[in-house]
Image (tube, rainbow, N blue to C red; front, side, top):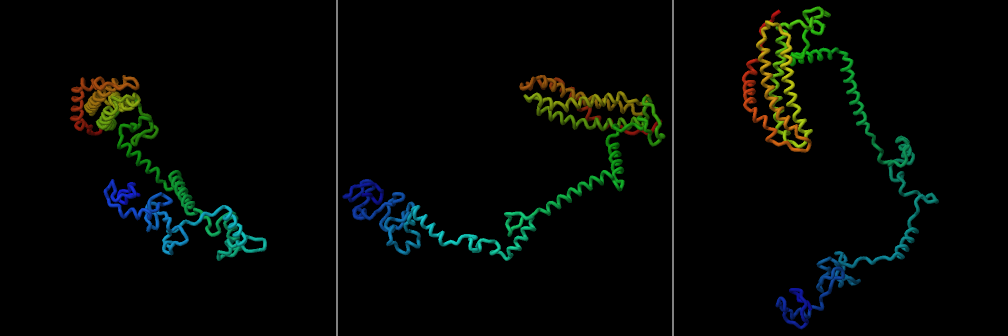
Length: 369
């Protein structure tokens, strides 16, 4: 038999379990009352209705003598499996009881929509005509067309087209005034980039239209002031550009991708070229020999020279970095050698530029002929 405490198999005549030492004297007489589940094989007590492990009804109630409470609780045997012959016989009997749909004797189709709707068959047919005569549509759920979205899209297209036509044709004459305001704002922001009055033969406010001015003639002091003021604004933007090239240098000078190094060095070489262009413009300035702005011109050339020195040091380091071929990582000590060897030169140029930039801003000294 089986010990009720440790579930070990022991002798039928044993009084105590040799494994757990439990008293099993009474269990010997109760052993025959245990049954086993036909589904999972678990042991089921005689009084159990269902298997405590899988829930299958106990063999004791799989009979026609099951109590009504068992039937209500679903603790009975499953329905008997039908054979194929029984299923076919049941189907043949059902066909004789269900009337055919749209029978030849004129029996109405019980699934006809007209019989289940408040609309008559003719009204449903007319509704189908209104929907464009589409076959297969649901007569109770008509297809909704996105008229709202279509109208909104057309209005938006019309508004954009109208705005473009208004700007192009300018019926109120507004755009020329706006264009003139833009030109005046550009002239104030970038005076050095504006053409000198009369230099192109178009004349100025004080000259008759169509008069030709000699391009080799010296500039007036007023014109010199306008030119050097624009040059000064260009020089004043150099510190910001220098900060950008330092960031590019720190990010890419030791990168193994040579294309990336070339991209990072572009702004450094551009700044050095811009300094050279400013110095060249000031050297070629056709100012009068006795111009009142001679010292201002020299000051601006000095400022541009100091910034060129700082940019040239960065470019020299870039030259070393770009000498390394594609795929090889530049050696940091070799690349930064120009920065170390010219550090005092760079510091002196930086201090001189920062100390004199604001002090050397050109100041108008009055109109001269």
